[in-house]
Image 1 (cartoon, rainbow, N blue to C red):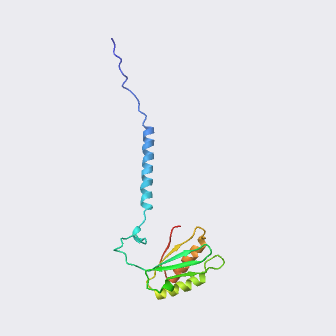
Image 2: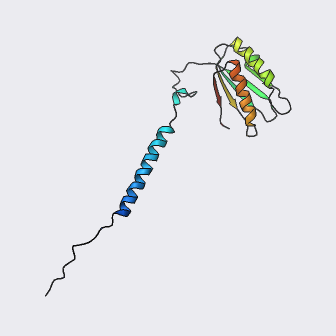
Image 3: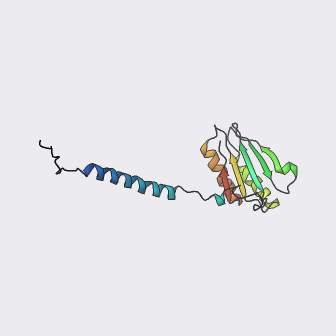
Length: 150
């Protein structure tokens, strides 16, 4: 009776295992870089801090309508009601850029602490109009600008 001896000399192919590990290392490195690049500093966002810590600063909300009209709503300010909420008529379906700069400068003169403007475009708003509006706000001295999501 002879026992069958197993053959103990075998060969292991490590190349597929090394390929798998190198692919996993590439994904690990790409993920680590992407996570560090894609981080957002939420301390600078409006409303990112608790209510107790945030002081009520005047904020100008501008609603862009489809016909070029702009509805201004200034919140947390000491301006009279007629200046805090008003509508500016557009010209030929576009916002009236010349009048905007004058109005914003007057508002800034009456409320010097007004530094934030948030634009709320419609789905049909043209990007060029949004950029022109932001340029006029920057020229008038509003430093903190934002575009509210649709």
